[in-house]
Image (cartoon, rainbow, N blue to C red; front, side, top):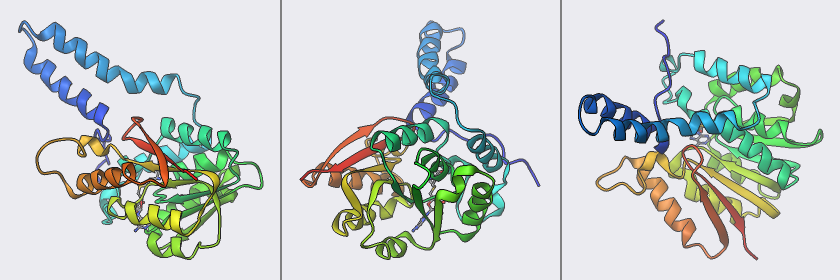
Length: 261
Ligand SMILES: C[S@@+](CC[C@H](N)C(=O)[O-])C[C@H]1O[C@@H](n2cnc3c(N)ncnc32)[C@H](O)[C@@H]1O
């Protein structure tokens, strides 16, 4: 088996840094070299600096990230890749929000290998719970093996199936924090179900991942289907009088949404 290799850039800033790095190579020996190097350093230094200044991840999360990076997802065939994992800074961001809203019950839509589910679970009180929805049974089993090795893993209740169906089955339950991170074409429907089925507890917070989608929502020209889906989702949220929202340019973008009464 060949190595799964290093992750490719999948956020606006890391894509910008990689493209500026290419420009630096072309600018060597020209009058633009110093300026292009300075601009590249500004972009390339951001993520490492944010990581270094953010509280470290737990040993269990570091192990989960390592196992995900070492696995060869090309064998899987389900369109999964290691770049789907949210990671250290976003995990800590979700954990801080979970504590700030004093969440006891959390819902995740789109779990992958379980990094964000475990980060959320670690931030809950002992009797708290995360209900984590995942379509793919194999990756759900991968995540469950990681949860079984971690003290906070027992707070996670994994439900396998298409999120539209598993969400509908949750009607009547209430969550203090919801993290949406599944198929982008499904985002609008998931938000509608969460709001109209009353899945969000009063004062609760919805966090939606990848709302900057590698810059595709604002770039000109024809964009891939995920970019179009996210652009349409962002515009629908911006026009929805039921909610107040802010797009946080962290990693690939995370929108925080609360219901206004
Ligand atoms: C970006 S990954 C989630 C990453 C994860 N939240 C983390 O932080 O590591 C998206 C996941 O959503 C799952 N997914 C895609 N479509 C889905 C659907 N219709 N229902 C439930 N899960 C879905 C994929 O199988 C994948 O594991």
